[in-house]
Image 1 (cartoon, rainbow, N blue to C red):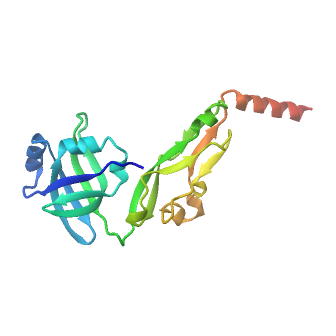
Image 2: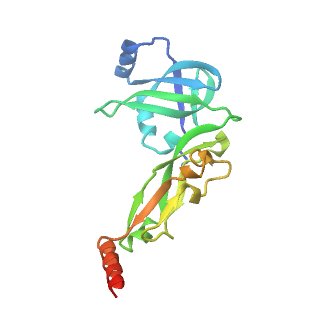
Image 3: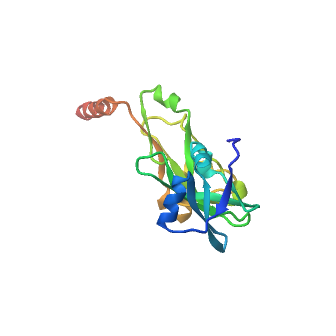
Amino acid sequence: MSNISYTFDAEVRAELGTGASRRLRRADKVPAILYGADKEAVSLTLDHNKIIQAQAHEGFYTHILTLNIGGESVEAILKDVQRHPYKPKITHLDFQRVDANSKIHTSIPVHFINEEVVAKTGATIVHQLTEIEITCLPKALPEFIEVDVAALAAGDSLHLSDVKLPSGVTSVELAKGADHDQAVVTVVAPKGAAAEDAEDAETEAAE
């Protein structure tokens, strides 16, 4: 888990509209909005450089963040990031307030481990999912979900139901029923192996 602290100073934004947002960006500020927890939405501004530094870390997208707004600390999660189409600039952020007693609905990245074990066999690992949609209370929110592929062989697949989620964390898709048990990762046989298997099958059929 990351030891980085995700705490940001934010100011309430009085001026709204496209022109005001453009002026903020020229001043190296990022317009943002904070909503949720049955409270009124608040327009904010944050320091662009601090956001740029933080967004380079995976935890920025999955951790519970702290926004210091006028002397009040507010816990929130990042819900959306808008970026400039070609410049390394963040143009807008959406934050959702966190209530310790209310479940969070978000997507968590998947970290695949022991891929080198499978790669040594010549097989190819195909990531069907890179994130898993989950719900949980804030205290149970994981930074990432680890999936071990060491035991997989060519032709194997690992599904959502095979993934061990942390205590208190539920898969959104699996909660919809067994027919939503999506593949997370599959292992494809080495090139040429499929053709050899087909030839062997034809030979056995002719004998």
